[in-house]
Each structure stands twice: as structure tokens, then as C-alpha cells.
Image 1 (cartoon, helix red, strand yellow):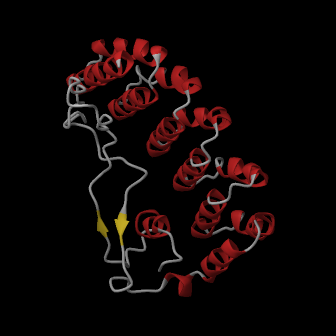
Image 2: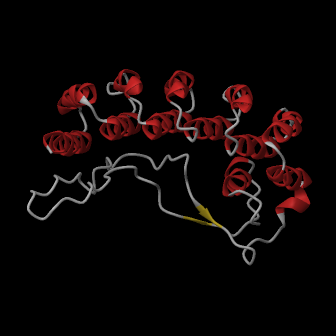
Image 3: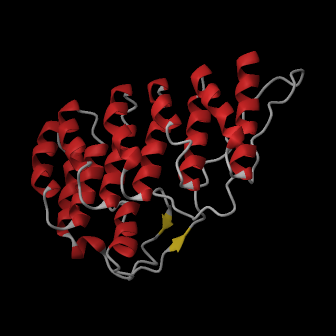
Length: 255
């Protein structure tokens, strides 16, 4: 099981309906308050974001759901069902260029499980030659695979990825939209502030909530300016969260 990534299990259980693993789903990642950096005792404490700032009515939609699985609880050995997964794991020992070539036919497999494993393997490679394949994966018809591609792009910590991620803020699948917001948040690029601000008037409360948190994480004057507009949000929870984030940003700016 060590060679099989958790998201493959997620896909099998949730995406394909092969509910054959007695897995335990952990609580949803709220992506809310991040504690401020430690400050000397002589300095006033940083205002904290409300721990309960997630709107009560928000559905628990989260592309990064974590699943726990062990050798003991797994009834069927995945590589026995998908020998391609063993092949993909073996590619980790090859040079990136060679591994990329070997992965290409798997990226066009009819089986989404194989495509997902190939996308994640590409995400572990830093070679820029793999970038076109990752960008192509953003067009995959399966939303979970688009999410995997977005996360792989964000993991590169390359600001130039922003322009490729931004269109998925308006994907037709809600979880893909959340993943795009989180990808931009992870990149912490101020070039993404304007695009994220466009979501502050989105009719979906969950999208607005994640956009507020992303702007707070990126920070800067422009992000603060947009967050001031959230005082008029119809959701009291979102307004309260934005106020706490602004207080934290103002504190960080002052010190």
C-alpha cells in the first residue's frame, strides 16, 4: 500500500463506487484560521481569526479530503487490480525525462484511476518538460483528475502557474473551483488577488468563504482593500471571518 497514493483510494471509493475498503474519512479541512507567528510577550497578541468562522450552512465540499487506510484494513490489494500502478511507482527510480515518456500513454488511458496515478506521478516531478502534460490534464472530463492537476501545478511553487489555474475558478464543478482557489492560495501570488476578488460576489457561499481565506493568506494592500468590501456580505459568518482576517493583516502590517 505504500506505493499507492491515498487519492487513488479516494477515487475508487467515491468516484467509481467500488466501496470495497473499510476506510475512515477524517473531518473536512476547513482552511480557516492560521495561527499568527510567535511574537514576543511584550507585544500585543495578534487578533485571531474565529475558529468557528466557517458558515454553518456550508456543505462539506473539500477536494483535499484525507482518508486513512492500512495494510490491515485493506481487503483487496490495489496493484493486483491495477498492475499499471506498480509500473507507475517503479518510474520514480528513473530519470524524469524517461519517466515522463513512459507516463504519456497512461495519461490517455480509458481508465480514470490510471490517469489519476499518472497525473500525480507527474506532480512529483520538477522537470519543466512535464508541464505541458499537466496542463493538458486540466482538460480531463473527470473533475477529480482536474483537481489533481491543479494541486500538482500549485506544488511547483511557480508564480507563472497562476494564469493556467485562474480559469478553473469558474469550472462547472464546485470542488474543482475550490481546488483552484486553494491552488492560488498555496502559490501566495499577489497576481492572483484580482481574480480571487471576483469571487467575493459569487452566489455560492462556499466559494466566497474560500476566496476570503485565500485573500487573507496572500495579503497585501490590494487584498485588504477587497476584503473591506466583504463587510456587506449577506453571510454573518463570512463577515465575521473577514473582519478577523483584516485585523490580523493590519497587525502584521503594523509590526
